[in-house]
Each structure stands twice: as C-alpha cells, then as structure tokens.
Length: 561
Figure 1 (spheres, rainbow, N blue to C red):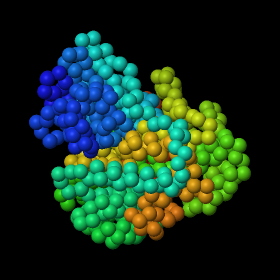
Figure 2: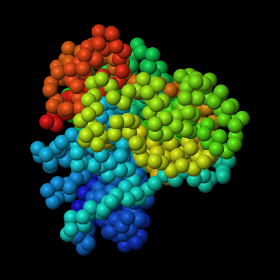
Figure 3: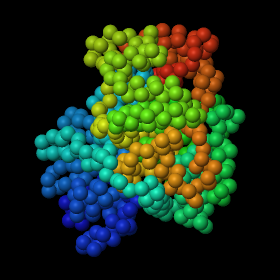
Figure 4: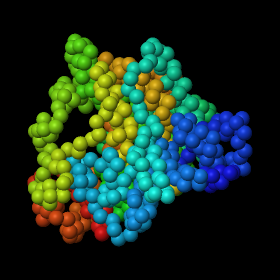
C-alpha cells in the first residue's frame, strides 16, 4: 500500500489493535482515509510521525516502509518479537521475509547450516536468541529494533532499538494503587485485543494467565459466546483438566478439548517440523499445534492467549536467585534468608534448589560451565566431534548471551527485562506464531504491550514476587473479582507438558531411520549418536530432552540439503 502522496510504501505483517484511536487522532491532524484497515492507519501514522509513531502502536507487527524520496527502506519489528522478521544480503540484494523457508527459497541452493546454532541447540537446547538463525547469513531483526537500508548504496545500517525495557524503579505508589492500575491496563489490553470482525476464541490451559484472559473476556462482554481450546494430558500428573473445567463453567464457555496420542504425533511430525521453520525444544509444541488446528476446525480464526505473563508479571518459579541477590545487594540479609525459606515451601521447590539458583546468579564464565558440568551437562558429549567445531570457531560451551542491564537491588527486574525481548520469550512466541499461522489462525497476546511491561518493571520487586515467594503477586491481586479465587490461590505451576518420552519411545522404529540418514556433518558422530539412542530405547540410558533434539534436527536438516 502507498501513501496518498506516493512517497511511502508499506509491506506489513501483523495487526494494530488501537488503529481506531490512532485514526481519530490522525484525522484531527488532517489525514484522509480511503479504507477502514489498520494497514492504512499504520501508513498514515508513519507519514505523519515517522519513527515516533512506533511507541504509539499497540499490536504485533513486522513491516517495511519504502521511502521514495530518500530511496531507503526502514524495517521494524514489534517490541516483543511476536511477529518474525528475517533478512539477508544476497548477490547485491536485500531480501527479507516473515518465514525462514522464504529466505531459504530466495537464497536457492546456497543455504548452509550455521554450525554454532546447531551446536547450541543439539548440546545445550538453546535456540531463538540473538540475531543468528540456523541458516548461515540469514539473521533476525530482534524485538523492539529497526534498521534502515540505503537502496542507492545497498548499505544496511546496524539495527537500533526503538523500545528497550527499563528496570529503574520509578513508581512509589502503594501496592493497592498498583493493583488498581494493573487491573485497568490489563482489561484495556484485552478489550483492544478483542477488536475483530470475526468471533474471537481463547487458548485455555487452566493456569492463572490463560484463565485471566478468558475471565476478562466474560467480564468485558457479559453476553458474548466464548469458545475455549485446551490441550488435555488426560491420565497424567500434569493434567490441568479440572482447572480448565472450573474456568469454562465459571464463564459459561463452550469447551473444545484436544487429547493427543503418540500415533497422532507420528502422523503430524513432519508437518510440525516444517511449520516451525527451525528446530525447537520439545513435543509440547505439538500440543499447541493441535490446539490451533482444533480452533480452525471450529471456525475460530482469532484467539487470545496468556503468553508473556510469566515474563512481565514475575512468574515461573519466582526468579529466586535474582530476588535473593537483590535483597543481598541492599544488605537485607535477614530478609534474603526469610525469602529463601518461604519460597522453598511452595510445590516443586526446595531450599537446596533456591541456594543453587543464588550460586548460579554469582557465577560467571568458567565457574558457570563447572557448575553445569557438576549437574551432568557436558559441553562435548560422545556424539560430538569437537575438532571440526573448534576449527570453525564454534564456542564449545553454554551460549554467551548478550549482557543485560544490571542495577543493584533490581536483579529480578533485569532477568524479566532480558526474558521479554532478548531470550526466553522469543522462542515461545515463535512456536505460537508458526503453529497458529499453519492453520491460518491469528493468535493474540494481550499481556504483551509496552505500557503494561514498562509499568510492571518500574515497580518494587516485592510487588511481583511476594516476600513469601508467591509469583505474580500483584496480578493475582488485580484479578480479584474477575478470576475465581481458587484459581488465583493455586500454589502449583504445571506448564504446558506432554508425555514426550512415552511418545518418542513408542515411535522408535520410525525415528531411528531418520537418525541413520547420513547428514554429512563432520562434527556429528552419528554412529555414537545411534548407540546412545538405542541405549535410551532399551532402558540402558535415561531419557533426556536431547533425544527429541536429535530427531528434530535430523529431520529438519534433511530438508535443508
């Protein structure tokens, strides 16, 4: 789409949720509109404000603006990386796209494996961090970044941030006031994300985050139909079916449950690997794949989900190491010891685990690798040939992540900020985007807006994780009266888990030929890898997540060659 004066052209993937409000603001400034689309509003906003338009946007997006006057491109990715953006320089051309296979197609037969990324994934399970992809020469624009391309000189600028989460404490409001503000922000986010021309459903796991989304939908729209979609690990200790049922009953939703078998995974595995575009961490991604497939089958093409709440609300298991270090930074030794003792009383935690996290917080470099070694994490397992990797300059050790902003007394906030747009959340968002797009479903994440994240990161740390170790402390308070109390008071966190070992071991005869195929990679000793695989299948070795990574990588790389 081009602007009215033909100066700017826009290629846009995503959605701007506050486009109606922006449109009204632009009309006051003299803008005229021919359509009612968010694309035209985005183009008009860029024409009016340029890069200053970016902080005004609430949405998920990856877009490129062509400036005819400057003969340049400006490439932009949303603050959290909800939508992907890949690019490369190839034979004097700047190529870009939202999917890695598109870049591979444009590169033709010249796609080669990035050995560092392959090593990081196969050995350490690390992926979707930093700019580099699994394909040499193809990189990602990171969340909250933009870059410019001088088309006359074909000169690509270094990416620059347009949004960076700040961890400085700027709020001195009471806990009650913060709770009220969070409630208002969250409900406003859900209201905007519900804006659609088609029915909107929700992914419901039964946890606090997805329950918050579904209950907010009912709170905002008392008479609307709500369709929820849930993966159920029936008969498993990780099943959250009872919690799913409680929420569906509470809001009067129509529930659609997905129960998955190993045979179904076997049938869909190649399609799943293709859809994801790059290797990924576990078969839990298949459960999400099936949830979006079910939504599509029911005619729901827009869904809301709770992704991002762990990262900006202080979730997971409470960031114990970072929180204790913050207290120690402030000389609060007694409070630190009390926090450790209280934190360790919650399900799935222990004092020893808390102490390990504190030690991990203070360890760097060689000490960090030593600690990983003591935990059985080998940098060079028997099936890796280190020689070719060293000769190619591959770092043999846990990946060196970009350093995050550190402020004494704000260590937990630093970890949250890093997970929001540096690592952690990026992979989860990639899984969701690729799975939903595979079935032409638009997956929206209301927790991920810059204003909500900025607000949370500006608060005292104890508002997010309480002195007794309760995660999402402020969020639980803000949701009172919207989400059932028994859900808000849940002490466990199950996560999105699948019976991976059972599934893969049941598919061993199908998977082994994939591992037998000669990949032609000098750093991979496939004979020893097969020995290890056979030992796992026979029960002589314990199952580890590396088994899935071998399978995923072998099949993905086979399609690359």
